[in-house]
Amino acid sequence: MEGLREKKYLIVTRKRFDPIALLLAAVGIFYVALIVLGTSNKETLFDFRSFVMVIGGSIAVVLFQFDFSTLITSFIVILKSLLGGPEKKIVAISRQLDDTILNGLTLKDIREGRELTGELLNDIVYMNKQGLIFEEIDEFITSKISEEFLRRNNCVDLLEKASTIAPALGLFGTVIGLIGVLKNLSTPDQIGPNMSLALMTTAYGAALSYLVLTPLSGRIEHHNNVFKEHYKQILSKIGVLLAREERTISGEQDR
Image (spheres, rainbow, N blue to C red):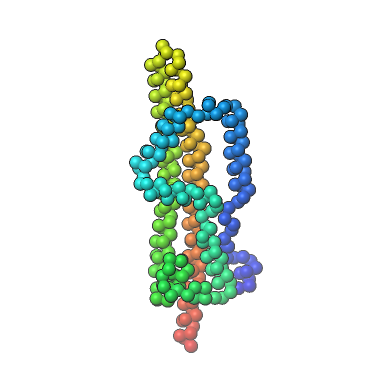
């Protein structure tokens, strides 16, 4: 075991997120905001009709495709992803399993497992005490992970759908604005508002899609892959512990 400790053959969970990457992203967003604000004023940047058409329209179309609970769940997943990686709640479990393997302990040494509580390691110990083999425990953990992974995939799907809807609504608003311009060529005071609608809807749609929704979708998708890999590690470590316990029991029976 000392050799394992020194050579670090066991995979250990890393920190939740890279603060340098987060800082660079914040600086980039701040720099873009300074450029936009430096070349325009508040009146130029905001058009209420364009805002309602793109933002409100995107939310309406998304709600038509997804239920309200999925929208709320996705919003929670996005907030958590902005605070760090998805492995926050499983990093302690992974480290406990590492320590258990290195110190020659068993699962029963870290949890009592008297009943099902919803806590992963406790439930695994409980099922092990009930005589379930590793394949059965594996199916239980996989089904539990699948529920969380489904919510995360729904979030990515929602963001990807919204990122295609926003530019389409922007283009729709542009067409409506240009139609308004052509209909009011004889009334110059109406040309400005209609042209504003035509241009600002395009700007809002592009900004919402390419600067907000697409980056968020990529971030969540990356976190989903990290989430899945961490649980694969946990399953592997549990398999090691259960195999060791089976060998110990078999050795005692042979004696």
